[in-house]
Image (cartoon, rainbow, N blue to C red):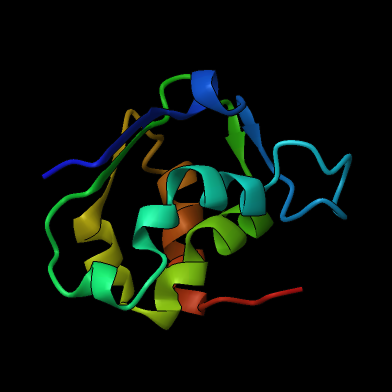
Length: 114
């Protein structure tokens, strides 16, 4: 059952770079993104099954930075593995050579709160 379907570039921002309100201009940061769109995943119980729950459409996203990816996505490694994360969260229309590689590297590196 899909609970969240987001056109990230239209519903949030086309540039995903800031980790939190202290980085860059602080706007459109990963903490706000996670709280707005991924809060359904923020519990151990949410990971008891691996049904697809979140679809993130990146067709209108121009850039994603490693610190954004770490804060928005690797945060969930406290509950699950990178492989299981990618079963529960689907990335559509994402540049697999650049953007998905950045996300995958951050998932494997783990959560680095700064």
